[in-house]
Image (cartoon, rainbow, N blue to C red; front, side, top):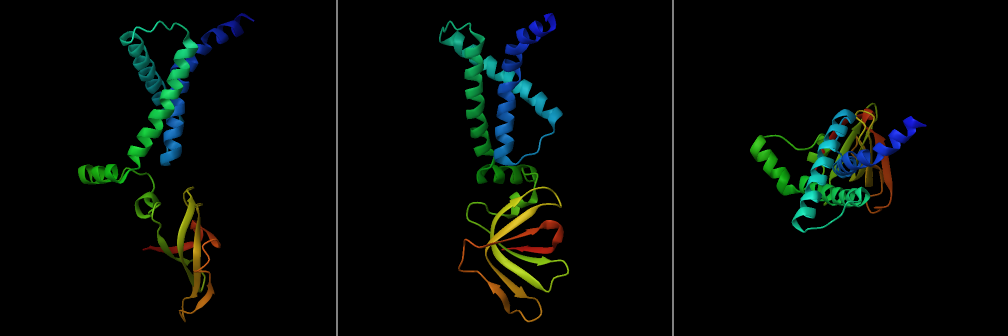
Amino acid sequence: MDQMSKIIAELPNVLQYLVPGYICVLIFTAITSKKVENTVKFGISCVLSFCFITLINAAYHVFNWEITEIWVTVAISIALSVVIAILFAEIYTSRLFKKFIVKSFQRSPHDSIWRNVLDYEKGTNLKVYLKNKDYYIIGHFYTHEEKGNDSWFSLSAFIKTDIKTNKDIVNYQEHKDVYIVFNLKDVDTIEVF
């Protein structure tokens, strides 16, 4: 029972110095599709949580607030982490930031090539040649699931065309609510336009 009391006594410290930063990292990586290893994620979480607590304590001092309850500080820190994660994710995914990174460092801020070539806002058209198939697919990019070579893509308003005759086999170009889904491992070539 003594061991359990010690764990419960340390719970506020875990909440204060890990959870807010972890929530911040979780939200940022979810919005940006940035991959962060768990060991790095916990380290960054601790640093961010410490920064949040330091900012909050500085605000207490500046505004002469007398808040001694740790749960209030944790709640404010979590709220701050959510706001900061969303703010930094918006900046990170902005075109201006991408242009700055590319111009300054000659590299993309993204882990995935798809974030560089697909326009998620205005849309992108793809021409997909599948392995061992006698047709290709042209359609409007709808969504994809990033899992390396086991990634799935979906196109809307697609046309399936015979490679040899260039005649349409199936034409759903006028139907934006009809999708075709394919796996990246089945793809020979994708043309983006």
